[in-house]
Length: 378
Image (cartoon, rainbow, N blue to C red):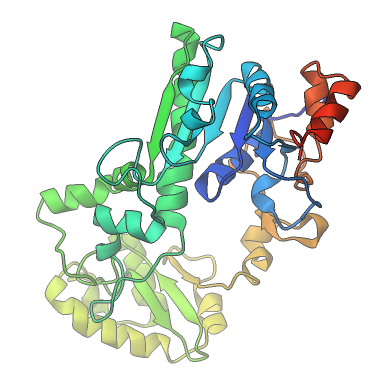
């Protein structure tokens, strides 16, 4: 039997089909909080401590091109609360593992993660974070006015609009199941989730407070008090005091003109002030500015590198980053007062739990040996 996990999701059983991007992160975050996540992978292999998205999971390697392999996944899923998959629409159905292939599991939550969704003209086409953001209006809105929109890593659509809305959908479906006793399909599309994240921006647009030209608006770098500035040493500082009382702290500590306090929201003045503030911040190093603003309400903080972030006093005090096996990674989030999750465990070897998991499903050692000989277990 698998070791009992702790955390607010202890007891929740999830089957995750091996994939890329937002689905593996969803499985990791759920496992972080105590869910028992079993990853169905294609081939066994050595453990990789850098495979952070698979930490805390169990892993089985099964050939899904065989009837016996499909049957094993069905038996595994029959004991689960949730199945997570991130294939193109129709792939699971062609394998015999679609939502309609589990008639004896009426409570199963079938969580589907795609970029475009399960339907629509683009549903069957390939795409990545940058493409999904491009169609939502999100991508057009970020970046400098005199340059092309930059790719914001793969956070906005893949993880913000994808992973988080997949988890949100799973939790909502599990809550509803308490009343209905029935499972359902969760269709989590990155274009839908990324669009849903822009409620505030859509409010600004509806009120005529947001234009379509980049770097002219409150939160896109247009405001001189909400952007980054280069410092004397070539490093950067993030400035964001939107509220008047916090802006007053910035003005005081940075030595900016006091008359700016009364005209903070005068957009006509913003281009000139951006240039003036840039000159001010270029007069000191990043760490000099950090010392000046430390502990203040000026909403001004250093822009840290990946290697610097874990060592910042606040991050270190909270233990925001861990380094099991020497691999730096984020600690489980959020935090819970009464049901904290257990320690982070290293990612499993792909297929390393195959025999143990199938034994729990009733497969004996002779059957497992034959399945391995026949190429069902890979």
